[in-house]
Image (tube, rainbow, N blue to C red; front, side, top):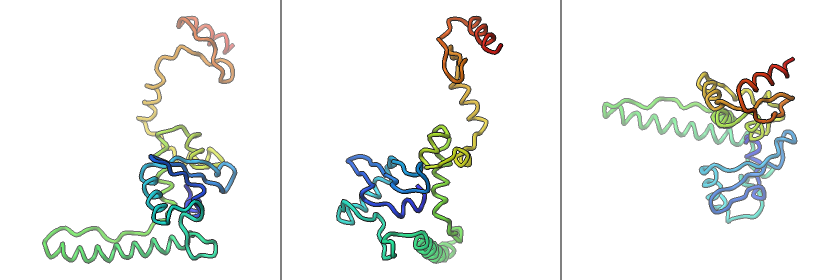
Length: 198
């Protein structure tokens, strides 16, 4: 999900059942941005715990705040993220002092802030090899497959895997993507391909 889609999530759009759940993106940049997505287990557990902590509401913001809009906003998230990074770095400095005293290797510093959007990019890039680009576009809520192509980075092994999955198929596509009847022999197949090419 886009960060803005997460910040504006409402409990009415969250389905939590006994073992999984669904998220409905009710509003978006375009018509295709409105979609329903299954939850991965980590998201399900986090939302289940948050739902319980908020008193199991049937409606309202999942991430409420005192902002005028009533929910967490991008600027608030960036501020909170920067504060968390600063705190983590301060704790690491303290740990490094103790590690150096003990003659051990210090932890790397500093942690750097990153845009929350990086998590969306990472998820889509990791998901790209697991599905076709059209499915990925649907998941991402992209209005154009061209946008989705940014996340698809086929490697040589992916090309080899595609050919190995393809195997020896007896069907021949001859008419704009429609399959012809299954052919009985290779010579008959070659003849039909030759005829249709002419």
